[in-house]
Each structure stands twice: as structure tokens, then as C-alpha cells.
Length: 237
Image (cartoon, rainbow, N blue to C red; front, side, top):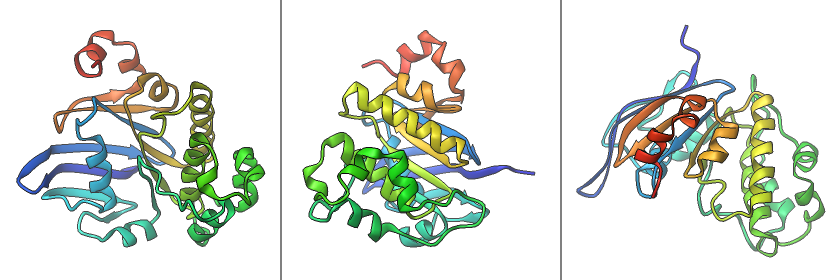
């Protein structure tokens, strides 16, 4: 039996005439964390956008929760239980923290963690304190937490996180890592795009390295974390 919740094979994506992804393949099982690693511009974000339907792949297959989704519009992909936190967060800055959560609320989904306002505020106490403040007036770290919390309010089976640690203070990065570990323990599946290998090494079970739109490595995160030569070849600036 195939336990993969999300799998991608032969994924090719273009921006106009520019060929960005070349036969990308990945798979993640329920309750696991997969890290997409690579240098800036390698194709990590495009991979997530292709999965989410924000960019239409030129070819390839994407399966999620037993359904093919590579030709589905984004709103249908989201309804199936795939959440997405973009690199630029896209929170509603004029709405309060609480209102940002309200607009994302969806019914409970069988077989996945059920998120409520109280559970969100238990995990993100800073958001509880700031619940009545406009989202544009909270810190960058709190905005990243809000973006993750808003995705959870849709009760997804899997969440795609695009560069979640970028630009955050080390203390906030540590808090975010602890949060992802907690979400994993709750049974949530996570795919995250990252350049910070230390962050990825703390939270991820498996990793793939994308180099110039191609998969250069696929394996266990622990093996990659212990291979300095591989890291130097594909991950150093």
C-alpha cells in the first residue's frame, strides 16, 4: 500500500518560454516533514506553486490524498486539504489578527488534526495577546506565525511552507521550528522550502535538493545533514 499523501513525478514547469523545472519528483508520507533545499532561484518556490496550482505545470503528475490535482484550480486543491503559506505571507494587514483567522476557517476534516481558535492561541500565545490588533501592526515574526495559523484554520492534511524562516530573528526561527515539530506530532504533513539547512535539519525527516530546476539529491535529512561535501556542492553560496 502506498502511504504517500503527496507525490509528484515528471514535473516540468515553464514561465513563458523559460523552462524552470525539469522532471522534478518528490513524495511525502502522512505525518512527515519534507524539506526542499537549494540555492536562491533553484526552483523551490516554483515547485510549491506548481503543486498548489498557482502555476500550471507543462507536464507531469501530482497526486494528493488519492486524487490527481495537476490540472485542478487552486481553490479545489485547497478544498481537498492542501494548505499554503507563501514566502511573502499575504496576510490581510487591515484586518485584525483574529479576523485573519476567521476568514480562513473551514469545517473539520476527517483523519486530520482539528484546529480551533483556542488551539491556535495555545500554540501561538503572541497571537492571542495581539488578537485585536491590525495584522499590519504586529512584528514580522508574528506575521509569519499568523500566516501559518491562518493556513491551519482551514484544517488541512498537508501544508506547504515557502521559506518560513527567511528574514526572521534567530529566536523566532527557533520558535517556528518548535511549532513545526508540534504540528508534525499532531499528524500534520509538511513540505517546506528552505535555504537554512540547520532549520531544515531540525524539523525534516527527508530532503530533496533542487539545483537549476532539477532534483540533485533525495534522501533522509539526517544523511544530508552529515554530508558536508554535498552541502558545499549544492547549498553554499
